[in-house]
Length: 393
Image: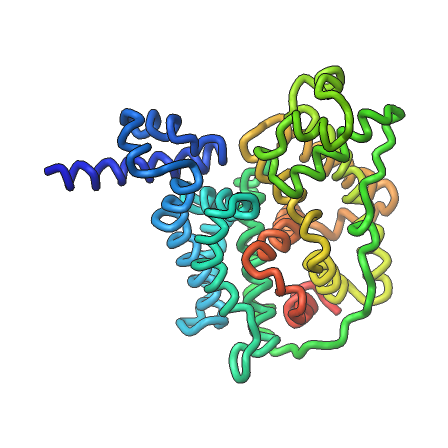
């Protein structure tokens, strides 16, 4: 009887932890909050788990990771990239599930991102899912070849990215069927890797040029992003931000109502700088090399080891927005402002992009940073074997 009660409580705790992770993020995994959500006293939770990290590990291992890996395997096998039945219909089913993720998939991405900042969770992720992804994406003698490993890695980029951008306003109304058909066909291509140009994304190596006219504000904006990139949003306390900026903590609250408001401000300025810089590089490259080669180069450059900090900022901005409508709205406003600026500079530009193409493009951009958590060496792969058949030479 006692054993049955323990098993029942474990199931209630993990189910509650899964829901809390998807809905409230890392803060929702506080043991007291999970106990309340599970309808239990605190004792069954604290008897089973010493802290939030241990609970996160169990949630990942027993609830999230198996679901995530199963969907990824279906997408890969149905596209002919792993053993199994090659089927456009099965591929569509897997990709649509990623684009409309359930609680388990949403929680999986939350925990994947947080593994960058929690050593206990990172150890679990690296031993399990990361080891599997490493096998998929590492060329070996025979199979996988470099081309096959690149196709697998590209599909994983899109898969992770689709979950990541699924909470964009209006995303549930975007019909992605044609985009998935095009991706399926591109993955069937037998294109061989070609030498890529040695172009670089110069702005990734630079600090964001904050210039508000208030040097203390500039220092705080730089510090909040720096700490978010190294410790995560939840680990970047106002005390640490102020200390890093070499100012008194009160300076934060003289300019912003909260840490979140400071982060929203910094994130908006970060995107206002990053979107145009990426677009300038992209347009220049496409004029010379075409969109397929350009996308392969951009993926390679973003995956460079020295840009881990910049990738972490991008995915943390995204993760925090999942649980904060103010940040999510600000991100959408920033992106729309960028689109409007591009439209004014090049009136023909938006006519070539459907809502579905824009959505998948954003997914791909975020997915690159997410794949790097599991396979940081993926930047060595020849992604042009997919991007050129998919986007054109």
